Length: 492
Ligand SMILES: NC(=O)C1=CN([C@@H]2O[C@H](COP(=O)(O)OP(=O)(O)OC[C@H]3O[C@@H](n4cnc5c(N)ncnc54)[C@H](O)[C@@H]3O)[C@@H](O)[C@H]2O)C=CC1
Ligand SMILES: C[N+](C)(C)CC(=O)CC(=O)[O-]
Image (cartoon, rainbow, N blue to C red):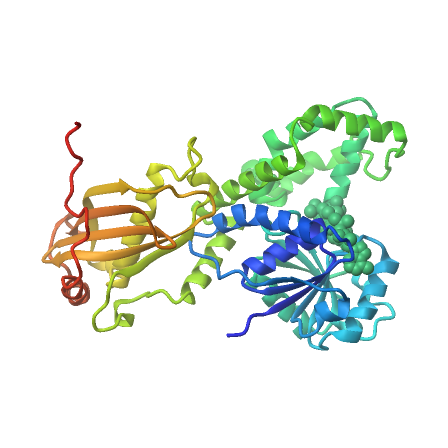
């Protein structure tokens, strides 16, 4: 299958993030950026993305696409499915870029602009094909944060907006369609309002940059990340709900709490004051170190939301399910050939929250990965949610894990499973964990089939017995794995 192509115009902070987003979704990416440092800068963004973004998935992401750099806009956009403009925030420059892009790109391609503030009608003004241009405003880091605001005008037909959203969804993003164009869209309106008030708090000597950051990160920032503002305030109204909340706190809007409509004068003194406070707050870290802290925290937070199947975490779970449906791994025993060898029961990258103080995958996560592989094998033989609800399930009685090699952050691991015994009510599994062909660990697990009504051992149900027997018979012809049945030796 041919890969989709993204043509990126501008490869700075945001263009680099888009490059990583598209590449990691399996797209080929072609970049035009006149900056001779662009290749190095994008390389650094990609390095960050490679260590963090795969950790958002509990399945393996598609193979990365190919990145290439081009000397002209025409070369970068020819044949592209999506063109993303991320040049500096100057309207004249953006309009000049669109003229060159449209002279060379396919008429059916989507042209997205990363603009933080311009309205799509301003971007479409004077264009050869205005209906091809939309705002696709992402958030930094583009390779981790799913939100992208999609804004169009009447010049864009509904099909184009729908297709744009579909393609963005395919890269793991959450396209929010802003139905009515407005300067700075939805999210930047909010961010700018908060930013203005922060500037006032510093200008007026009320708080330092660090104190303001503390007020956000120890409090409402955590609430916003998982529930936004309206649901948060609905809860704050207590049982009486949103109406009561508004009646109670509405009048405060008239009190002189905020100066949201004015901006403090941007004097050299204010810039120096804030830059100085920011240096005192975080000058001991490089931007690269800060990016890694930010990325690791974001991955850990989104992964926590995955466990809760909520918000950004729910989106990532849906993406995992879509990838798994088409990643070529076996989902059901009927897909196995007549004489199946070891079965691939897991593919994923090592996420940041699986590391320990030694900087490698911590021992508990080996069991986590093997337990996921066992669950996958159970699904393959037909012990799925329906079977568990109506019939039985497996309980693990004994486990023996050997740690043979280190697994590091972002490395892709694969688990292959051999059935050593599968009869009556006994299932004896042998999992091997690889990075490439390097054996990292083995997991030997003895499971007992249980009747879920009595919670006592019971023979396999008919639905699964045949599949287990067929796999076990085929696997009996494989070599018995070195290490199977081993116990920890006596100390010398
Ligand atoms: N930095 C941020 O937090 C965010 C920025 N944006 C938007 O993304 C766009 C780009 O911003 P940044 O990446 O932050 O800026 P940046 O300054 O990091 O990158 C801009 C890149 O465009 C290149 N460039 C300049 N003229 C060009 C041309 N004629 N053709 C191709 N490339 C050209 C520059 O060499 C540079 O690499 C802006 O519209 C901005 O509003 C959107 C979301 C967040
Ligand atoms: C500062 N900014 C207006 C360019 C920010 C954005 O557009 C979005 C973001 O990532 O915060």
